[in-house]
Length: 268
Picture 1 (tube, rainbow, N blue to C red):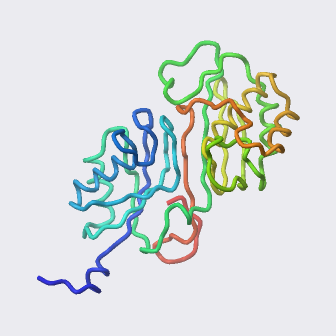
Picture 2 (picture 1 turned 120 degrees about the vertical axis):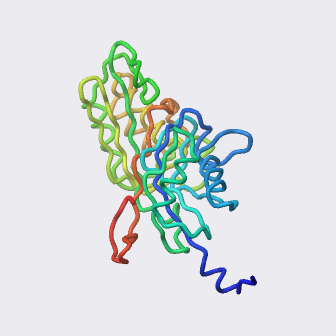
Picture 3 (picture 1 turned 90 degrees about the horizontal axis):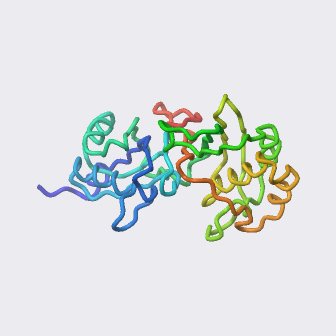
């Protein structure tokens, strides 16, 4: 049967997935040849499900060893399945350390990376004398006591629009001005969490920020040192990079994605 071009175009759909993963076994989220990646595994699973060669776009880039609770992925397909089927069926084909949490259909024009309004990351530190066993793959063990009040005083300076070049990897491309909406350090017993929310993030930004904050918490740097580091805007000036396993992409938020068509803020 010959399908008219217009009919074929109308059958094309865009699906958005919220994905959770343990990044320990992967060389990051972005596709790379000859190494396992989150994007690569999603594309293999989609190929098995739909029979299509599908390119997946991701809302946020995570480095090797970094985890995600709320990564957002987008792809185009002509598969006729109900939206909910993509969750159940893809989870059959995905490895156990990657799971699709939810799915929805969006306009074909939707761009998962450019239209993201906010991204939220969490970094977890275990601040106890002995190293943790059960959660060792999800935190940074810092044995010496941390001054969390000093760390919070330092990180408060990040809120607002700043040139964050000091906390970017030297190889990070493009402009380095970003907006941080929220940055908080908290302690609960031996656990110290750093939560940061911004419009977008530079390569290694969160891990280099955590590295600098730990220096403040250990008394090796002052709050004023942290302020000067931020103000210098010297690319890569924050040289200590916290290990990847403590970092998790918690959520990505968008506007106007309610299925009813009304404008709303949502993390899908």
